[in-house]
Image 1 (cartoon, rainbow, N blue to C red):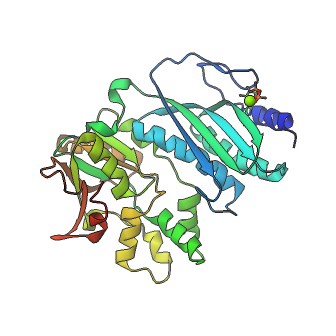
Image 2: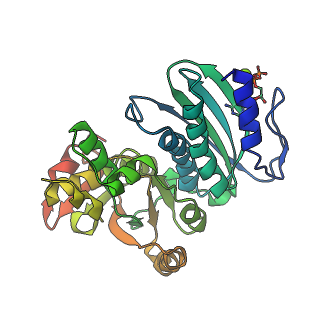
Image 3: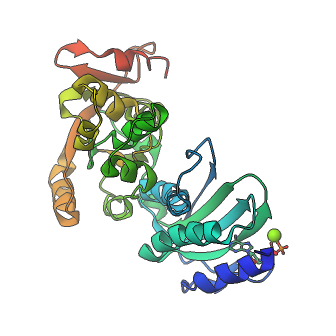
Length: 318
Ligand code: ADP
Ligand code: MG
């Protein structure tokens, strides 16, 4: 398909708009009049690095937008609009159609308007820039956790990492595992509900211990997690030959969950329960933030009863 025909098709397909978009696709620039503080984030999605060659075009499209929306969720922002930079290797119409359908379905779900982008030929790569809105004083920053805060997630973890493992080992993964990896579901409603309630939040893209260590660093604190309290996805049981210890590893060190991990004062516990009941989510209290007494100690430790798990030791340099 010719570049301009593709852009024209995109313009027609993505007809969703937003009141503050004065001018969308079609001119040299989009024109916006934002009403509130904007939360802005961008992520590039490259074949072989971010998704396996052979992943369905629909899943690639979905995930390219989902990982961006997940960053908005982790800030407590409401999605508004996005830019789409597409690099496509050829003019395969059905591939482009499916890719756009994957992006479109998720954009429609969050009424996120496509306002522009760029289209080029080259190795498959998708860069999306999302814009959301969030009151500046309520944004969920990584730097604002406090000693004594409790640490939570609202989803069972590790299924996406188990799917990556299965694909690398050429083991057939179940539908549930594939879905966790290919169609992550950004926790937008949760992020917005946590505004002013959670002290800090991050979305889990690189694994619980890794990502939580960013909150620790930026808040100058340490975290301790209790292994028994970390919710492990039951979908991992679908894989043959995986024991409980390996399943825990997927949940603790695996990536691609795109669940929110957040910190909140124990005083906010009731509000958190109400938020989760309202959103039909389970609240898992997995650990606690504390003041670091020794600068050389690891920022995230995972305990199994009284025993420090080796998974956490590997991360002591963080
Ligand atoms: P220019 O050469 O001025 O950058 P383009 O030909 O690249 O213009 O794009 C024309 C219009 O189409 C612009 O408004 C641009 O934002 C939009 N556009 C191009 N590619 C995409 C895309 N992949 N998704 C959404 N809008 C796009
Ligand atoms: Mg251009």
